[in-house]
Length: 337
Image (tube, rainbow, N blue to C red):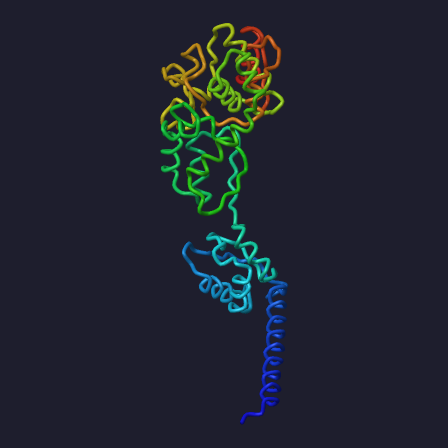
């Protein structure tokens, strides 16, 4: 017969051994989870592809030196019940972070972001070039989207294109951001700055939002010094009120297909819907995408009697009330007479 006491003693030893081993293993896991693989490690690019399983992700992290032990990392992930929460994307990960911190980044989807800066006053084609340069698809695809009346309508813009509504700003997008999402973000930014106060002022002035954005785009292209925006706006408002042509070179340029950089007398005499030397009104739509300051200037022009201005070739302008004053300014600043 078996000795019952010996069995109990052996079982106790085995249990104690398992308990000690479990404790040691737990300590190792705990230390692993809170200890960086390399405190001096630099951030490197890591791609987590859609459909990758936990083993593939863990092995890749170990291979790149982000973590020391892929097996331990998998245990942490499963313990945290995070295996299905890992998000695909492009990440900048560093071995200087603990495995728990890395797991947090992967579950939150804190992917690498790419900077896209859009200066004020660019048109759709110029923005499309910057979008392609930043790595978000092709220029052609962007233009097709931005000039699609259907797509504009889906974003709440009832115009034939999104010219004027792609708000100039510095944006940060993940690599897999689609052009539709990028454009949607730009239009959302526009909507956020065109406040209820702006909308009320638009109505009070007797304009539509589209007309104000169109005027703001002209102000944007004509302005070299920020403080002059409200004054330039006053000139255009005064001209519209008097039924005068706006006579703005940037509008003429916008209407020229394949403009070569030199505006000519022939260009000024050639009729297009955007040639404000020919039409006695605003052009049919914006010629660029204006910033908030130009929109504000269009809504709140300075109170002046100016109806002319000419460049002083130093980013500022000389403003005049009469054609006689204007011609004198032209001779001085443009003809050096």
